[in-house]
Amino acid sequence: MPAVELVIVTATLVTVLGYWVRGHSSLPGKHWFLLAILAMDLWLLSVGVELSATSAACAFGVSRWAWIGFVLLPTFWAFFLYEYALGAKVPRWLVPLCAGLAPALITLAAVTSGWHEKFYGPETKWLLSAEGAYVQSDHGPLFFIAITYLYMVIMAAAVVAGRAVRSANPAVRSFFLKLFAATLIPMVANLAYILGGITLFNTDPAPFSFALSLTLVVWLVADNRWIDVNAIARELLFYNSTDPVLVVDPSGAAIETNPAAADLLRREADPEAPLSAFGELGPIIRYLAAHGSLPDVTDIQLGHRHFAVRAHAISLGAGQKQVGWAVALLDVTVQKIAAEKAIAAEQMQAQFLATVSHELRTPLTVINGALGLLSQGGAKVSDAQKARLLAKAAGSSETLTTLVNDLIDTQSLSSAEFSIDLRPAALAPLVQKAVARAESLQPEKDIRFSCEMPAAVLTVQADAERLGQVFGNVLSNAVKFSAPGGQVEVSLQQSEGMAHVQVSDSGCGIPPGAEEQVFAPFSQVDGSDTKVAYGSGLGMHITRQILDRHGGSIRYVSAPGVGTTFTISLPLVA
Image 1 (cartoon, rainbow, N blue to C red):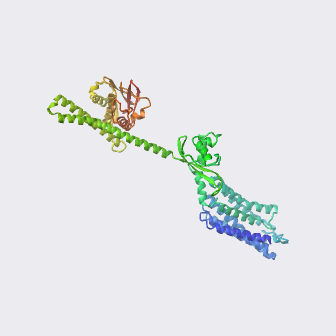
Image 2 (cartoon, helix red, strand yellow):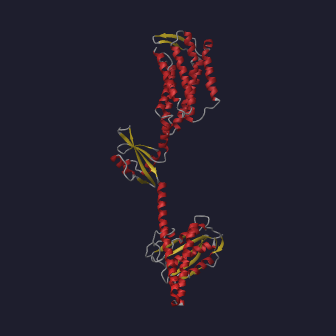
């Protein structure tokens, strides 16, 4: 009989595919899926026996006991969808209710229908046709109650599948759409049978439609779109990667982009422009389309980000036609910044060695020369010459001491060793003391000082020694860069809860845009060999760091050839 043959083939196919699925341990809800296949086989077996029955009693008996598989199949299917789509276990109380009590009650009502005729009515007949014997059922009220329950189960499964479609990651959304469609197939087939009288070999097409649904699901397995975790992981990497990834056809046009690439194109590109005209990526795409490989230089900048471009050919197999490329833009912004910092650090180290060696050599040369003349001159060196040589040696020694102290301070600035002891301190005496020390610097330049102090006492929270170091650095620079006979003006003022110390010189001035150099370590605005003033380049860097720890600031205004005014601001004690 063709109908029985179809049953045998369908049951065999579903069983074999179910055995194949059994080996996929990564499937959530796999045990419910396998139980659904067993229920499917049970139902198909009963359909086959019913179609090949030789008596009405046998056909009626089998059709009634078939309700066990008829009820369990959609139940196990719904349980499977619940665990797979929602990633949660089926509630324990629901399992005995839906997989035990409901099938038992419905099957009992069907089996005892000969007594009460509420499930199958008196018009139920066993008919013979050219295609075989079959049961033509007269449906009673209990039948429709059972069908209503089953439709509630199937609708619950459809709702779960629909929720999965709506919330699924793009990498697996296509699977859930197919799963949703597969869930609706048995319901449509059964409605066609009940409402429209449509049959398959004079029997309910529902079991065959369920078999079709299960086969479709297994096909999804074989298609590597479902329980193949590796395939899903690859797509998740594509959709969730923070690096832009584009699929490009042989002409260089973008076929598909992941969200990161779509966002980048939306922000940085003209929506009407082709990919080949997109910033620094455009020339690389054009080269890729023309030569089939990337150019030698693939590091590009798009907006404020840097990318390394990688391209992988897409073909249908070894020796087959190439159909495009997968182009990945690896964000190397952090590495680029780190490399720039490393280069800057290397340059700073080189500059540090050059500066320190130069600054050490100059005073050491003076000291060695003075000591050499003193040791070799003997009586030929007059007392005045001795005093002058000793003064030069002492001055150079002091320069060395200052340089070493600056180096120690710079090193300790980044550690806890650089301590600040803040206490209330009157600002005017600290400024006046620093001015008095500055007057003894480079006396041969004959620099004139003026110091304007307010009558009111201005008190700040300060480390007196460190703040004296700040004033000393600024005044030392003013003396250093002033021409002989120049003037340095110092004033102390207050405004809006802040004290301001201004130091103005009439020196060479600072060119525009040199603020980074002024306050950077081991840096001087004039780095040439012909500069008129030497130094470690650490004083102003240390000054800013100390003021930061005091809650203060330092800024300057300058005009080349006119002079510079530095302003030190500190919060007053309330």
